[in-house]
Image (cartoon, rainbow, N blue to C red; front, side, top):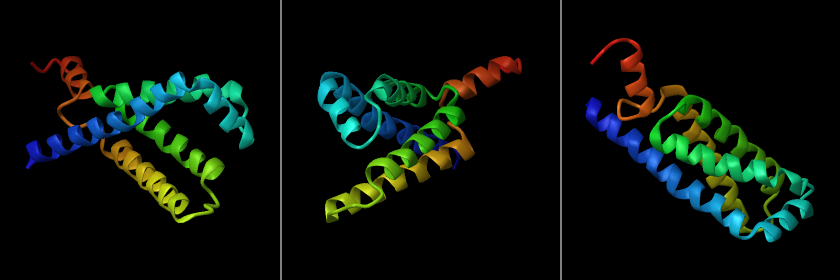
Length: 134
């Protein structure tokens, strides 16, 4: 059962990476358009580098399972803020679906925060090295 749980957590981390990493990269390649979208929604565009670093950095760190609880908590907060700023009052069915998907993402991040990265992670490997376990 432990192997199934570890595989599930690894798959969750891979899925998080497969969403947030490309989205972060798209903000780099479409920097001006993203900055304009942020400004139009009352978010200062000077925050865009922090947004990009959050999406790309957290995705990479979660993929490898390094400082998983910290980065999962940060992404949960980031995602909830995105809902509050960009998706709080959806104006279409698509907007409602995006809002709910973002909230589900935040829930997944909180589960990862609560339970950690599992045995197949850098967190686990570093923990074993620190305790002298081989």
